[in-house]
Length: 178
Image 1 (tube, rainbow, N blue to C red):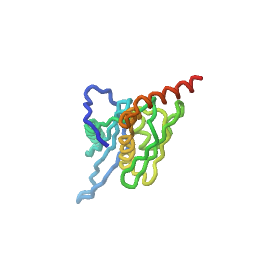
Image 2: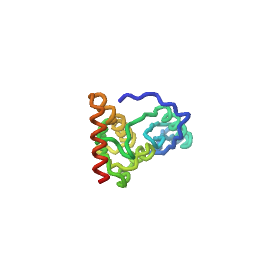
Image 3: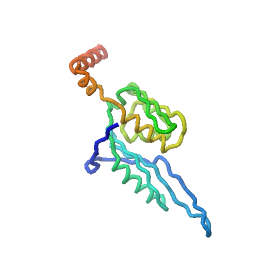
Image 4: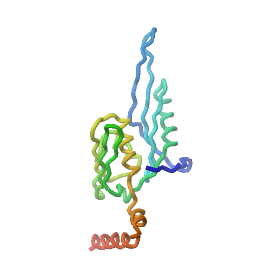
């Protein structure tokens, strides 16, 4: 999963809070509360990033998380509102299975996976989170899967069959029209 650095200045990014956790530290005078926020940002056309921020106030934690997510943007292969092929993303004990779906299916995913796919711009997909339901690990497993997606055109070129891939795609489009 190679990620080149993406400049976020020119992008129109939208952010979504996935999870906010309140942590209590017990001290002599009582409890001190602090908050951690998990936020995903995306451009809606195949660019997504995740960030985690900690602070004593919720808005400050969210702001820190958004800044971190903008620095960790990654691009993945997308085709006509869905992913290019079936993929399983793994992180820790979490696995996220993602399957491409035909146009009109919608975004069938739950929780943290859904938040990542919404900001990424995927409209038609079927995804299932397996294992632990920890939102931090689920988001990282989803990003692992998206980062491992391969663009079919690039794969055909690597195999030396670029014209063959275009011919197969053209035949399938003609079959759909008729």
